[in-house]
Amino acid sequence: MNTVKLSNGVLMPGIGFGVYQTKSGKETENAVEWALEAGYRHIDTAVIYGNETSVGKAVKKSGIPRDSLFITTKLWNEDIRKERVDQAFEKSLENLGLDYIDLYLIHWPAQGFEKAWKVMEELYNKGKIKAVGVSNFQIHHLKELEKVSLLKPMVNQIESNPVFNNQDLINYCKNENILVEAWSPLGGTGTTILGLPELESLGKKYSKSPAQIVIKWHLQRGLVPLPKSVHRERIFSNIDVYDFTLDSRDIELINSLNKNTRVGPDPDNFDF
Ligand code: A2P
Image 1 (cartoon, rainbow, N blue to C red):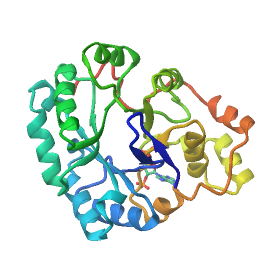
Image 2 (spheres, rainbow, N blue to C red):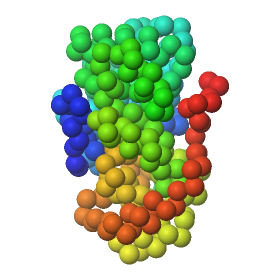
Image 3 (cartoon, helix red, strand yellow):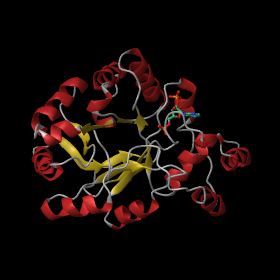
């Protein structure tokens, strides 16, 4: 798997394994176990997913050395609003059975995120977090954060898929040296995006599945995608994307599928 270097020099495996909506218990344990077996070394969870403990169990069971793994989790909105960053962080560590987190993200730009960031900077300076970042931040949120922060976010994890490619925000982040991760890179649960005829015909052209085509598209545009699956075969195939390269016309074709329609909530108008 490829690796990318964050602005502070930390290396991140170039595809992460997503566990949003993966049920705690056996479903998450199996999925993470298969992902580690397949070769993923980057797992993306969040306290709100309710499956940190199961992720931690699978990680422990794998016996893979801690420094070969990259684990991300996220600070939830209520903990931002109620100024409980330290407690929330300790709870995530405990759930995961870890003594540091590779990447800790502000999950949504909830009110009080500037204050939360100051606490995250302290955790980073103590070495409890190897990299700090944000998720679902629009350009104006990033600018607001910049006014108060000493550390610039190393990552912004945002929605991006072929029908909502989010390219303007990605371009802004690239200029600011903020690495972009894509959530719902395949279009999320219940997606019909993978059935688009353009993606099916590209799949035939490269002898790959539409999902592999989309994952490669993300990689070639410099993103770190976080595909989610609970199926062993898909988990394996979603990282089997290093034996082909999309040519520039095909990248353009996928770019042209953009409809600016989100599958997830709008960071400028969310009520949770
Ligand atoms: P499942 O978990 O049942 O495999 P995203 O990563 O964009 O959130 O999308 C995840 C959705 O796409 C999930 O519903 C997942 O279902 C499905 N999915 C993941 N990998 C593939 C694949 N290779 N082919 C088809 N669907 C996939």
